[in-house]
Length: 254
Image (cartoon, rainbow, N blue to C red):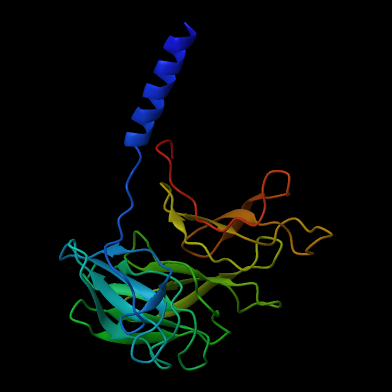
C-alpha cells in the first residue's frame, strides 16, 4: 500500500508539473521604445495590443506602443511635458474607436493630463489636471453607460488633497464629481468597476477608520454614482486586511 501511495503521489506531481503554464518572453523594452511599463494592455480594433510605459521614448517621459501577436513591439508615440509624462495607467478604448488615457504628471500645471491616442500614432492632450480639479491620476479610465469616462486622481482638491473622482468626455470636458475626505477614503490609485446598477465601485488604500499607526486609516471600499454621490461601504481594520492596492472584480452574482 505504501509503494502504491508513493507511485500515485509521483504520478500526481508529474501531472501537476505538466499542467503548469509556461512563461515566454515575446519582446523586450530598450529605452528607445519605452521603459517601465505599468498599465494594463488594451485590445485595439485592429486585433493588436496597445499599452503605455512610464519612461523611455524620445523625451524620456514614456511611450505608447503596439504589440502584435507575433511579439513585434513598436513605439508609436512619445510623451513630453505638454502631452503629459509618466503614465501610470493603461489605455482605454473609447466608443469612437480611439484610445484614451491619463498621464501622472506634465500638462499646464504639471499635475497630469488626459489624452487621446489614435492607432496611426497621433497623441493629443485634451485636458490638464491643475490640483483644483485633481492631481496625479493613476487609475485606468472606466467607460460608463453614457459613453463618458470615469476615473480617480490620487491627490488634489478638498481641504487635504485626498483625491477626486472625475468624469470626462472624448472632447476633454472635465468635471470633478466629488472629493475624498479621508473619512470616506484617501489617495485612490486603483481603477473603478462598473456595477450592474450603473454605479461605480472601488477601493482606496488609505482613509476610513483612523488608527494610531498611520492616522489616516487602512483603506475603504466605496460606491459612487454618476452624479458624484460617494458612499463608503466598508473600512479595513488591519485584522481583515489593509492598504488595498488593486481594483474590484465583478462577480457572476453581481
